[in-house]
Length: 151
Image 1 (cartoon, helix red, strand yellow):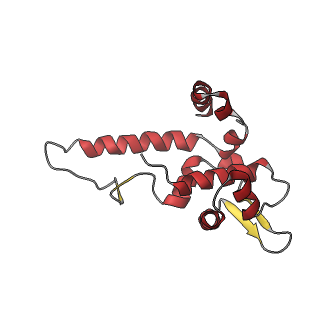
Image 2: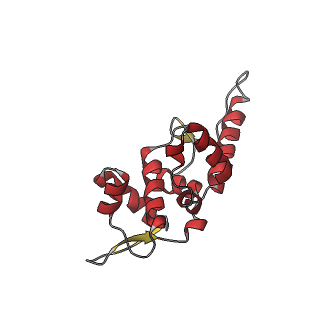
Image 3: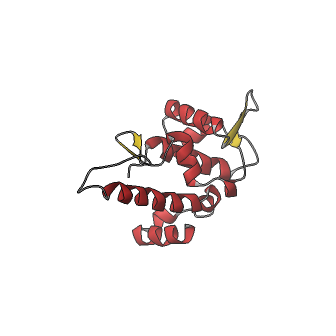
């Protein structure tokens, strides 16, 4: 499975927005804080806005807020907002994938992988990620343990 830069940047931007909900954040501040290329982030935030995951306000007091509570935004929502589907094979969705014998069972495996990933990503919310600071700094085993707690 490939996790796109768009999905990674989108999730990081949403976590940044969820961390401080008292005021809107600009793309510049999010990009700087998360070390994301500004121009790329502008495109990603546009996708998030169209999906209703963020809302925006123009002007000197403007910026971006979460479009709904962080507890209601899953990583699956984020990936679908910026990438469309979760998994594809050569750019095509897995739903209609069909192979001749003897490989006819392979599409079912790909779909099962997609279903499992969707189940996990659907259970991890932006709120859970905000509440789990510093896991990466504690080392790989701690990250795995924290991931188990998140899902």
